[in-house]
Amino acid sequence: MIASRFARIDETCDGGVLARIVFGDTAGPPVIEGGVPTLRLAMYDDARDGFAEIWQGAAPVRSGTFNDLVFAHNDEFLFCAGFIPSSDRYTDATRKAYGDAFALVRDLRFPKIFRMWNFIPRINGENREGLEVYRDFCRGRAVAFEEDYAAASGMPAATGIGTWGDGVAFYFLACRESAVRHIENSLQTPAYEYPQRYGPKAPSFARGTQLGDTLFVSGTASILGHETMHAGHLHKQWDVAIGNVAHLIGADNLQARGYTLRELDHIKVYYRNSADLATVMQLAKATFHPDADIRYLKVDICRADLLVEVEGIASYRHRSD
Image 1: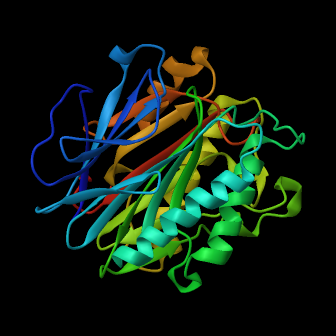
Image 2: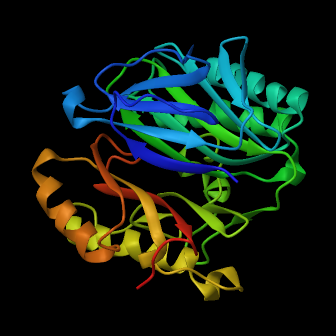
């Protein structure tokens, strides 16, 4: 199985590590350090506030490069990271980078992508055409999914969030044989079915993906159907976002054994305004298990009227008392 944990930025990696993502104050293309793919993201003003995310699987692990991508894999799981240089239009470069990633998945025979992350600078700004940067990015990503990825595999859980760095960074996880089930939320319109008012191409992701007894929850915000709810109201947006997560992972939505919010861990909470941090921390601590590992990142969110977004990993292995 594959597992993740949060660690200090300066922590060294042991054997079996597939990836190290550094949420700090610098950014750049991914590199291989000590045999481990390492991606640095500018998500904090001060590196002392940051952390590393470590993905670990069974050894042996083999790493390498493919075009501008770095990757590592063992017999069952693949990690891949890429970077798209800063631009005034991202569609074509995103389509190429994702196309390369899908080619790597095919070549190495890891056909099931189950979790992706995308970090997009000036996410609510405009490109040279006057199109929002996030919508510009989504257009290129959607074309790559349409043309280069096996439709039968389905779209994976994903997060698309802002970053303070220059250039789009992304990373994802895929598997070879494990059973994968992509999950939608009956309270929300599937993102890939959003109407055109949200851009020329709809976002390409599922609300969650289940891998064995683990459910990866996509970045989730205050959206019902396809509409933002409670613009400008942090507490109300939190309640809708958390209600969405609880429903997504619950037995009614899964039509199978479900999870509770107390079984959610490895949580990232993205918030837009510095002044909201204390409140967001109070809300999170009141919502999740006291032992849940939570990180807070002040960044812009994919819609300008969203104030907070939550992601995490639900597992029966996590404490539910």
